[in-house]
Image (cartoon, rainbow, N blue to C red; front, side, top):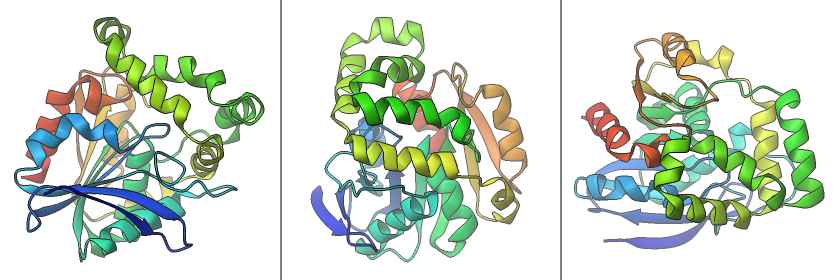
Length: 262
């Protein structure tokens, strides 16, 4: 059964949540990337919803969730994920996230270990480059809106071969990116700009799988073994995709997730 609701975060912001699959299914929380919404996980739902209670939510600043003014933090985004899980009545849950969602998962695995069973983190790194990386992008959005960066960003999300074969997917993702609240986008950019989870990785004692994209410019596939190596017991895999790996290589990503969840 699929349900849809708005639930409050700790600071009162409202988060849009979609749940599907059997109500007594294994808990699985999915977290979207920067500039997308819960629908980015559509390719995974057919293979998950039979066994898992799959909960997707729009990260604050995205989709139908609220977009409060000001800078966000990775800790705040992780607390939102915990608020979503509490609204489901879950004491603990499995987690999967791509890009910003993966970074949220790293924070949770390090700082809320009692709540996390397993975490798959994809196309992400514990450090996102700081102000040198984010300053110009944030300036463009603040001055000119989302249109100013849509083409540049989406071009990095998919390999040229995939984009050429799937113009409808590119059009849909681009439209969702343009529709993202500039206020919310800037708030999340600030969270990634200020994030540095490198010291946290050694504290993680949950099972973690790190997924990279063979064609992902950031983080490159060559960095994935090192990220996994900093987490005790973590493993890693590379799928045939660029940045939004769960969309570009939906079959490979879903296989990696199902294998990891067991």
